[in-house]
View (cartoon, rainbow, N blue to C red):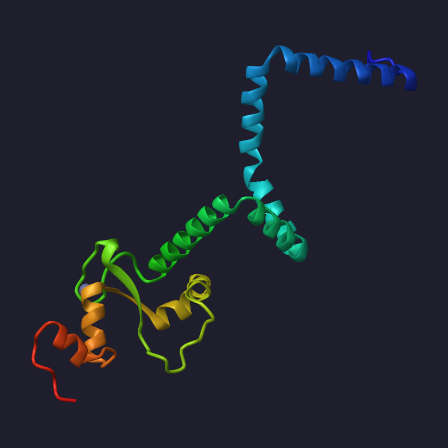
Length: 182
Ligand SMILES: [Zn+2]
């Protein structure tokens, strides 16, 4: 019970002294400040991300404007970030569809794998652009598995020929093969 009660003036003086001391300490120990700040940053990373996510949802219009401003100011970074985002979306879809493998022949080299529409045109959802389609499927795994599959380029081309999606005669002529009767 040894602590004596301070008058408001004394308390204020103590507070300012403490602030001054902290400030001086930070100046004297820049390295320790750096590691401590980093530790703090990491400790609350999740919480901060969660908070900013909630903020963005609550302030959609404001978020849209500030995002557009940033993109206009940093066109190169914006392009890069869009590309990264699109790659991330594709990886999510691969994940929905069971990984990097052609469903017909088992080919696994991602460089020659493609997303193929299982049900052509008929009652599959329509999209304004390829990117909006991929974003939709990334967010809706059930739909994604219903309408998309992974094929390698070979199997995809063979499927196109079998489904009459390509001009056989044009292709056949180019390769000097007898045109198929249509
Ligand atoms: Zn294949």
